[in-house]
Amino acid sequence: MSWGTELWDQFENLDKHTQWGIDFLERYAKFVKERLEIEQNYAKQLRNLVKKYCPKRPKDEEPRFTSCLSFYGILNELNDYAGQREVVAEEMGHKVYGTLMKYSQDLKAERKHHLQEGRKAQHFLDQCWKQMDNSKKKFERECKEAEKSQITFERLDNDINATKSEVEKAKAQYYLRTHMADESKNEYAAQLQNFNAEQWKHFNNSIPHIFKNLQDMDQRRTVKLGETYRSFAEAERRVIPIISKCLEGMVSAAKAVDDRRDSGIVVESFKSGFDPPGDFPFEDFSQNLSRTASDGAISSTPKGEREGAPGPRPDPKHTMSKAKNKLWLFGKKPKAPSVEDYSHLPPEQRRKRLQQKIDELNNKLQIEMDQRDALNKMKDVYEKSPHMGDPNSLQPKISETICNMEKLRSEIHKHEAWLSEVEGKQASRDRRHSADNHHPAPQGRESPEGSYTEDAGQEHHTPHHHSGPPQPGHPSTDPHDFDDEFDDDDPLPVIGHCKALYSFDGQNEGTLVIAEDEVLYIIEEDKGDGWTRARKQSGEEGYVPTTYVEITMEKNCKDLDCTDVLGTAHTPLTAVSQL
Image 1: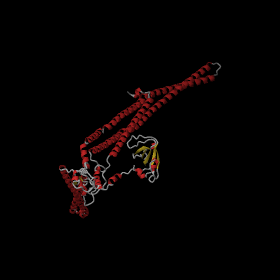
Image 2 (image 1 turned 90 degrees about the vertical axis):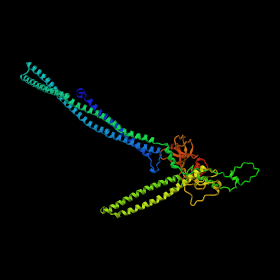
Image 3 (image 1 turned 30 degrees about the horizontal axis):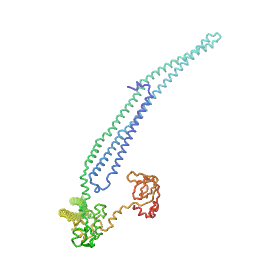
C-alpha cells in the first residue's frame, strides 16, 4: 500500500511516525552498546580471574599433580573462552552498533530533507489559496460597490430634482464600479483556476512523491533493523565452535585427573629413604637396688639383662637425644642450611636433586659444546675466506667456551661422585633391610644415622664416632633444639586493647566469637575494610567488626604492662603476646 494515495492528508502523523522509527533504531543501538559492554566486562573479569589463580612460581617449583595440571589446563581454556567473549563484543561493536549509529545519522538527514520538501509544497499551496481567497474577497467587494453605484445612479436618474451633472457623475461611477467588478471577476477566476491546478498537482504529484520517499526510507530502516538483528545473533553463533572446543578442553582436563598417579607423585616427592625407627629399649633404673632371694616380686628387667652382668646405668639425656632425632619424621622438620651437595635432604630426595642438577649441568654443557662447534666452523670459514672476517677475533670466545666446558665437566664429575655415594648407601641400606626382614633382632633398633646396633646396651655404651661434624638435616642432640623449632612463628605483638560493645557470633571463617563487655587484645589495626584483628585471653586470634568494639591504642605498649586492662597479674607484654 502506498502512503501517497492512502495517507495524503496525514502529513503530521507521518512526521511523528518517522521520528519514532529513528528513535527506536537508536534505542536498539543503545541496547547493543550495553550488551557489548557486558561482554567486555565479562571477558575482563574472566581474564583477571585466570591471572589471579595462575601459578606465579617458577616452572620447576610447580606441582606435577594431575589435579593441578588439569586445573591449569582449565584456566588456559577459560582464558581462551574470555578471548572469544571479546571477539563477540568486537563484532557487535563494529558490525551492529557502529552500523546502526551511522545509519541513524543518514536517516535523520534524509527525513529532514523529505519533510522540508513536504512543508515547502504545503506552503506554496497555502500561498496559492491565499491569493485565490484575496481575489475572491476583492471580487465580492467590487460587486457590492457596483451594486451600490447602480442603485445610486438609478435613484438620481429617476429623481426630477437631480441635476444633469449629478446624474452623469453617478452614471460614470456606476460604469467604473461595474468595470472594476468585471476585472475582479476575471482575476478571481484566474486565481481560482490556478489554485485548483496547484492543489491537484500538490495532492496528486508532490505529496505522493514525498510520502513515497518517506515510505521507502521507513522500509529501509525496518530492513536494516532485521539485518542488524541477524548480525547480532551471528556474532554469538560464530564463536560457538571455538567455545565448544574450550569446553571440550575443560572436559578433557577433568578426565586427565589420575588419583593413582598423584599418589605416586606424593611418594616420589617426599620419600626420604630412611628406614622406620626400631623399638625403644627398656631402661632398667632398678639395677642398683639390692634383691633378696626371697623376693617374690616379678622383675620387669628383660631376661637378657638379668642373666648377664649388670652394665652401667644408661645416660637418660643420651637416650632422649637419640629418641628426639626421630621425632622430626612425625612433626616439624628442623631447619637446616642448604648446601651444595644437598646433604641436608633425606637420601631419596638428595638423590633426586643431585640427578636433576646433573641433568641441568649436562644441558648447559651441551649448549657450550654446540657454541664451540659453531665458533670453530665460523673460524674455518674465516680462514678460507679472509674477506668475511678475522679468524683470530674468534679465539677469545672459543677459549672462554672451552673454559666454561671444563668448569661444567668438573661440576658434573663432583655431583656424579655425590650421587654414587648416595646410591651406594641406599643399596647397602636395602640389603641390610632385606637381611633384617629374614633375621630379625628383637633386642636391637635402628640408630638415628641409619646404622644398626645389636642391643640396647651396646647403643648406650658404645657411642658412634664421626670423622667430621654431624650430617646436616639431622636434629642436634641438644635437648633444647626440639623446643626451639616451634619458636619460629612468633605471635603478633599487642598494640592496644578493646572492649566489646555488642556480642558477635563469628560465623565466618577467621572471625572471633565475642560477648558484650568482653575485653580483648589488639594485635592489628583496621586496614580500612572494617575488621580489626584481636586476641582473646585464651590466646585465640581472629577478626572482629571494628564498629562492635571500643578500641584503646597504646602508644608505648612494648614498654608498658598491657595486662592490667584485663584484670590479670602484671605480666610483661612479651609474655602476654605469647598467649
